[in-house]
Amino acid sequence: MGLYQRSSDRAVLLLGLAVTVAAVEVLSLAGLVPGYATGELVVPPSIVPGLLLVAVLGRQALGRPRDVRVARVLWVAGPILVASAFVAYQRVTSPVQALGLAVASANEEVVYRFAVPAVVTAVLTALRVPTRTARIVGFATAAVWFVFLPGHQDQMSSIALMAPFAAFAALTAVVVYRSGSLAAAALAHVALNLSTFLVLEGAITVRTRGVVVAVVLLLAVWGYGRRREMAPAAPPVRLAVPFNLAVPVDDGLVIDLRDGVVPTVTLPDGRVQAIGGPPARAKEGPAAAPAPLASDPTAPLLARGADPGQL
Image (tube, rainbow, N blue to C red; front, side, top):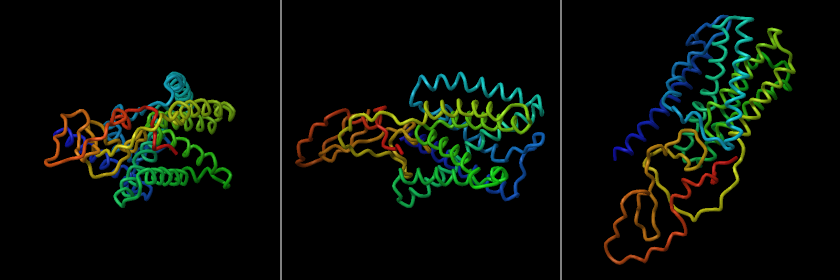
């Protein structure tokens, strides 16, 4: 029971922090809560609960790569490009402003690729909307919100200029939807914003910016957002996780409640067996002979290729 309680408590804490991050972001956009000035830029106040949320997520924020080799290239090349852009930008502005831009960029991924999708998904699943549908609606809602942020609207003099923001929001949403990697999405966002501001300062060309962004974003999408090869379908098994929020048992992440939770499997004769636990006791009275399971009942959880949450 203690194992279930710890997992449930962590899920509630994550959801509570997600609600707090989203609420503070709304208040900030309404001008009711001030941000933190860093040179000519302002870091939104949602950074405080956002950092707490990332701390609770821990290693989970790194996600699960779809292609380990590409992910390794990303985490070698990406930080080098970002560090180079950071050094160049702080030379033409100030170290504080460069740090503020990097932090604000990463924070937008926490807000619009985790907090807002998590809140929308939780509300919709509580209303009995299918979980996969709820997650897609959550990410889509956050992406639209992201595109129409005031700072982004200032850069849109025509509908055509909306396309880059929409494309970036869609690609990073796919990365987080399929792998749970907030870190990869944040790295791409920091690279994009630092190189964009360098162009505005006249420090680099538009072509150089395009190369930097294309390399980091392509590696992030290929390493973390690509579809996996589907494994052969496992025999149908009913799984139960002891928590009242419906969250998919698949590779996609909004809030992963499986951490530390022992799922159960309902056997053909009606007995409930905790996976990895002691054998279930037979029911009193006559019972039909249990049908043999064709494979390990944990396969839907552990098969790396299985991904029911794909777009």
